[in-house]
Amino acid sequence: MALDIGVGSRGGGVVSALLHIDGVSVTFDGFRAIDHVDLSVDDGELRFLIGPNGAGKTTLVDVVTGLARPSAGRVLFDGCDITGLRDFRRVQLGIGRSFQTPTVFDALSVVDNLDLAASFRRPIPALLRRRRGVSSLVQDTIDRVGLAAAADRPAAVLSHGQKQWLEIGMLLVQQPRLLLLDEPVAGMSVEEREATGQLLRDLAGDHTIVVIEHDMAFLRRWAHTVTVLHEGKVLAEGSVAEVQADPVVREVYLGRARDERSGAVAVPDGSTVPLDVEGVA
Image (cartoon, rainbow, N blue to C red; front, side):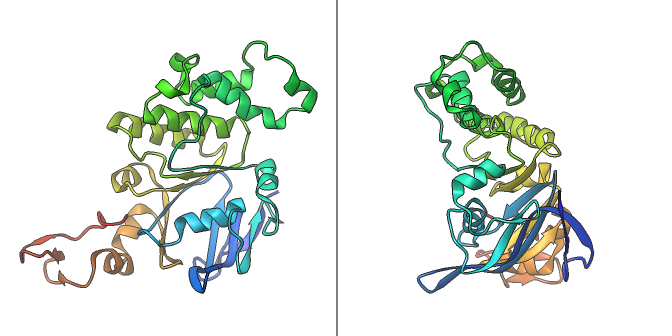
């Protein structure tokens, strides 16, 4: 059952939100890392979350996964208040997360990594039995993340991009409803970024996906809805075109030194460059 929540000032309508962050603040030693953030992500949506270093992106994801406790506000998942739940209970409810550095078991094969990740839903007697063959869930996941040719290889020999796909696969075999991915294309080749973007598009709908991303070319190619964080607050939200055109976003990321007449940004040598949000990081 999805939760119907009024968006209020950001739209005034009603959305069917799988994830709703309601007035969340996080304070560390007197520093407010997150400042009364409201954010709703629809069931089956692919949402990109961007902002400069220190904007609060990772902290916000930490709140959703239970690694950080809010000083105010609450987190609702599929209509249930999960603010006080332990992190492992959130995984059981269907929240999965990847990190910037893939956390895979290098000594194990791709199949064994996926099989181990899938085991958390098995009863203890099943864990004690020797695996016979590859389950349909693991095989389907191998195919879906594009690692069929590397299924029996140890994770240690995979490329960086392949390790990222393996980690996404390790989340998928846990059958999550919400995937939180932290810079999934960092360090990837052009071809790997393209394959990852297509994978995310394919997964959206079956899963709700929130992507923290710094690669603006990747965002423009694959994002539909973007949320911009700045100094712990939601600065803007909308399509890529809407966010790029937002004057507040342009002001924050490009600064005040610009030529208003030509729509260009002043650079140190006195020349100008076209106004764009390439500087978003």
